Image 1 (cartoon, helix red, strand yellow):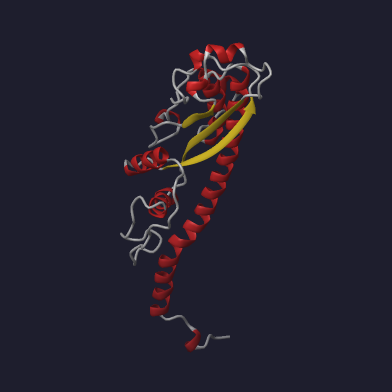
Image 2 (image 1 turned 45 degrees about the horizontal axis):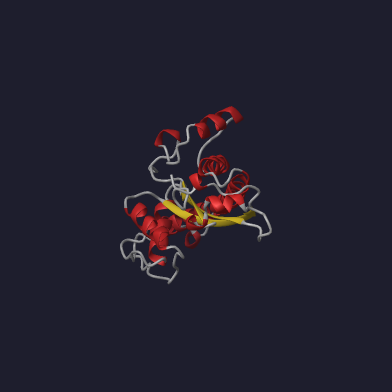
Length: 243
């Protein structure tokens, strides 16, 4: 059976199909990888919530010691950005007490803080020797409230840079009107979507780090727990547990 000449694809039709594929392929790839990146961010948020819980729990029994709180936080967050093959390897990494991304450990292009651990309560000015002496003696139970900012590294190729540009525009940091990486034949019109960070220091750090090419996004979670031990004045030389 011979094919009707009118049904055969002409060279111009084949060329049109190739052009259409070239235009659509970046968008399809972005949708697939973007969905993967979003699921990884969701997983990272769950790990961050788990880390915040353990930070509050550890602080509640160690008189709000920043050293111990940061140790358990790092231990909980490591699987989100680093390959840990065994328990001894995990303990060795945590024992070094480094709270910044290390390019030698697979965190390429990342060099800033891994997380910020902020103690919202009790306040530094309220932590005194007198408070230690009357702890849990006819007073309201004291709670340790922590806020964890996890600087999650975006590591999915092609998607991460585009997502950071979108996020910077959506949060009003910098509009993006250059070539659209998802549709190279047009310019992007990514602009302020009126999203805002509740903490100005987080917004400034996000703007500075992404401006320098560090593709991270701050995941913020909170946790609270009743203190089993009184907060020690020596653990409150500063309010927060920063790296």
